[in-house]
Amino acid sequence: MTNRLHDRVALITGATSGIGEATARLFAAEGAKVVITGRRRDRGEKVASDIQALGGVCRFVQTDHTDPAACSRLVERTLAEFGRVDILFNNAGIVTSGTAETVTDEDWQNTLAINVTAVWRMSRLVIPAMRAQGKGVIVNNASDWAVVGARDALPYAVSKGAVAQMTRSMALDHAHEGIRVNAVCPGDTFVERWLESGYFAGSEPVTREQAQAESASTIPMKRFGRPEEIAQAVLFLASDESSFVTGHLLLVDGGNTAQ
Ligand SMILES: NC(=O)c1ccc[n+]([C@@H]2O[C@H](COP(=O)([O-])OP(=O)(O)OC[C@H]3O[C@@H](n4cnc5c(N)ncnc54)[C@H](OP(=O)(O)O)[C@@H]3O)[C@@H](O)[C@H]2O)c1
Image (tube, rainbow, N blue to C red; front, side, top):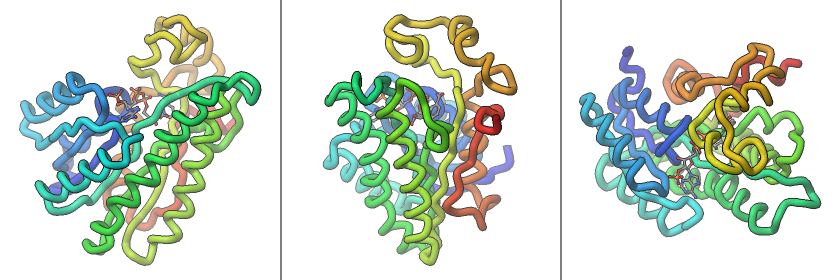
């Protein structure tokens, strides 16, 4: 490893699995002190203890990001222990399906609450510390569906489009304060959650092979992304290697949106 995040304090939302977990492991290996969140305590504590066993610094703070008070407590605790927040990776999110006619009110509201409102809320909570430091980086996890339309996934696509606009607008508002704001836009990235009911192909759990047959064949690179590949893009945006990059949407999608 190259220690690209030596002594940086990184807050990663939704790191109990998938892209967030892979990013936490990479950031810790690159020297960051990492605070990770999510609702699943067993998963979060396992990720934190794995990182610590490798000599890294990691704290799991069980947090539901739809709860404003819990978000405030998380940032207070991070500042109390580490004294600063250098990087916020707004990664926590859910996928919901449905068209304008079929999406339920509950799914619509839940999707916007975690995928949009929590991104704004967490950013609002860390910006004062970043301003005081004169430096900070926010990376939002959007999606390739932030830049192209999606079928039967209206609330999700709307939420990720909002994340794209939040990224650009927050970048403009805070560029003069040394705070950079960018987004990673993953294409289909195979995560464990896909194997659960309802996440990917209708209401039944799918195997990797079924998912591959259904979707990967349309991706120019003919495969899904891996969480570790998305984490490398997040690392670029979070590190000084992207020091003149702000308001950018970095597509990591195997060429999907190039077609
Ligand atoms: N995989 C893909 O193909 C893909 C493509 C484009 C974008 N993305 C984006 O990548 C991000 C991560 O998703 P993933 O694919 O890695 O799936 P994942 O493994 O399901 O990760 C989602 C993470 O978000 C957390 N989360 C969800 N709701 C939460 C809440 N209310 N409070 C706190 N944490 C919450 C989950 O933790 P708990 O369940 O423990 O709460 C989990 O750690 C999402 O924003 C997703 O939209 C994924």
